[in-house]
Image (cartoon, helix red, strand yellow):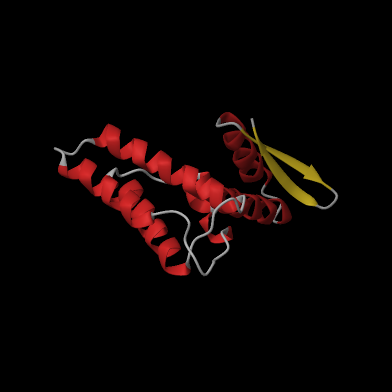
Length: 146
């Protein structure tokens, strides 16, 4: 996935030194051969090799061919093989978790301001039981996962 994510860093050129259309056809040939996914995956790794070569400027590619490379990689990785980009999913889930914990920290702060220490302690203790440690400090409350 790293190679796919970094395709935007590849510089465009006036001339393509890589035959992207032939590579793209090899991907389709693998699918037309009774959905031969091992061959398709090998072709996708060949595409990764092209991406790395282009990033190192050892080869060149036109804007149009780069778009074909990107669309082909995207189509076969995500649409045909059904793979997902775990790093973007993890990032999204981390943001959701952080948002939920910040909400609980704010509710705990309100409970403490209202001198409702039973609720404040319950929030802290219940979070601790699921592996979330609250840390009270001079600048407010922070958390860590254990």
